Picture 1 (cartoon, rainbow, N blue to C red):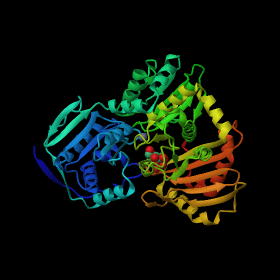
Picture 2 (picture 1 turned 90 degrees about the vertical axis):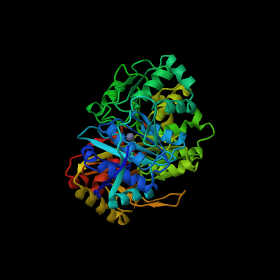
Picture 3 (picture 1 turned 45 degrees about the vertical axis):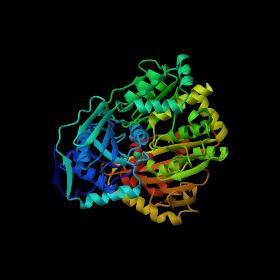
Picture 4 (picture 1 turned 30 degrees about the vertical axis):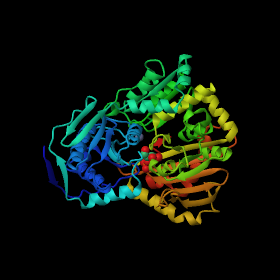
Length: 540
Ligand code: G1P
Ligand code: ZN
């Protein structure tokens, strides 16, 4: 086995976005594309020599090939050991856990999260730090710089590693350790939650449906829910990971998880429903006849933290991304918890968690998680809910009713305009940005603008500043609008419009409660005219 040095040249556009580098699969499969980026990761972290990494992905098309390439490149760079999930599979939270538990130097996760998979769909790669969390901006910036100057990379000439069985082999001087992707993660969950209480719940006839959406969480959910907690066999649907997620869009929301929604709203609904995404870090929570939005789910878990053993020593503080609804703020204020508002993207929670300032975090985009790993964690959120359901004996609907009664209700929705002409989207945001200073005091569709600014974040732990993190407009009477462009799309631009309306009344139809804010957003930004669309492509 010999190390070969391959001449290459920079490939444009290898700039990591909200969550690593995400592109069309075919682009990743093109000559040198993956290799250039992997070499740039190693360059950005000061080389791979002597280091131990975790590698795994969500099993989408090209996952296994990419793992093999990374192994050979790590070996060529002198890495000591790479820990790989069997079959090249690791959910994102399970990878984060392994990185931490094994005291490694970080890990490479292959995933495009909730984006569809397949030769004509999406692929992605990101690096997580030794704390288990996504590389912060100063590290991803170094990667991008390295992609612009790369002239060669090194790779070991070697046969493919056998990823199909657990055990240890060598690739050159490097150890390749294949581990059960589920075992360590399941053990961690047992430490965090009251499995006995949840087991009793299921033993008492409680029913559940978990839609794994043909993605990576299938084996995790089957082992934990059906295997360890005694949920009925068949509780987990679509539990076998497939390279193209069964041809679907593995995004756990009412649109893409419609079969689950239909079942939960139907006459024979089980007591509890849940789903997770392509790489297992997102979640959807739904009760019999009631969908719980991610912002409300975060707030509910914060309010019931005492029921969750993980938070036995106190919740301390919570964090939410800026566009996430302010429901959790109400809990933080009432319970005297620390409260942090961060830019979109899980990487911004890392410092707050490491510093012990917060123990629970969430994003409106179906991300919920805590201080046990440094990624959002889909199955964790589901187990947290199960733990609350078991501890209180209440239904999902009762829990939400009690919550809204106590804290008031923040109606919330996100409107996505996908595949918009990038120039038009940029101009829409640019023009509104320019008008922000003059907006306060003016009217938009009958509502007075109280405040308007572009969000910038000063990290209280490392002092770094992140600018340009979304435009926000606060309206009189409890309304708020946020606009930003997605940093994870692979085609054109995706405009996200986040809408919220706080109300004392808890029984309004969400769409009606938000109608005024929707009109104000249109009046402020001229979305229809500028995007050329009649309405959003996806409403969550
Ligand atoms: C989206 C979500 C964001 C999440 C990210 C990765 O990013 O909005 O909350 O952290 O995916 O899952 P965006 O496309 O908006 O940049
Ligand atoms: Zn994901």
